Length: 167
Image 1 (tube, one colour):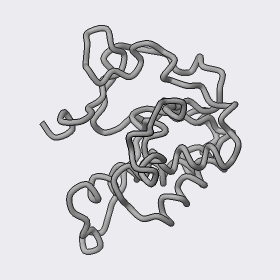
Image 2: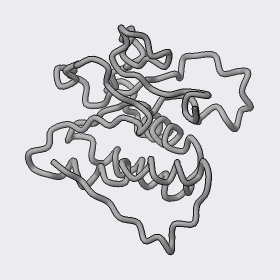
Image 3: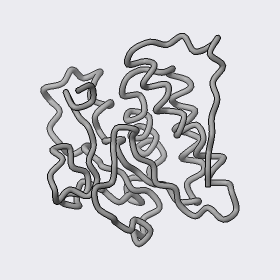
Image 4: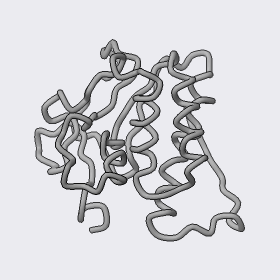
C-alpha cells in the first residue's frame, strides 16, 4: 500500500521542532482511515528517524496495541508538567483494526493541543491511560534490543535520540 499526503504550503508556517512534530503526527491523523480499510489488520508505525536493522515479525504479537512504555520509570527529575511527554516512546508502536476508536482519540488529542514537540508521545500515553487500554498493550520495552538508540549491531530497530536526531 502506498500513502501520500499533501499540505498546502501557504498554511504550513511552522518552524523548527514544531514543524517536525507537525510532519511526524500526520501518520497518527491517517491511522483511523487506514485501519478502516477492509484488508488491513494491523498497522505498525515508526518514527522518521528510525530504521529496522534486522527483520522481526510483529504480526505474531497477540496484543492489539504495542508501545514502548516508560510509565513505571522514575521521572521525578522532570518538571511535573513535562512527565506526560515521556511516559511512552513513539519511535515504534502498532495498533490492530480493533483500535480505531483509540487511533481517533489520539488524533483528536493532538488536534486539540496543536503541534508541539513530544505531543505524539503524550497523546499516545494519556489516551491509552484514559481509555483504560494499558492491559491490552504489549510493552515493547520488555523486548531486549527491540528499540535501540545506541545503534548496536544486535539492535532490531535503530532510532535516533538526543544529539543523533540532528547530527
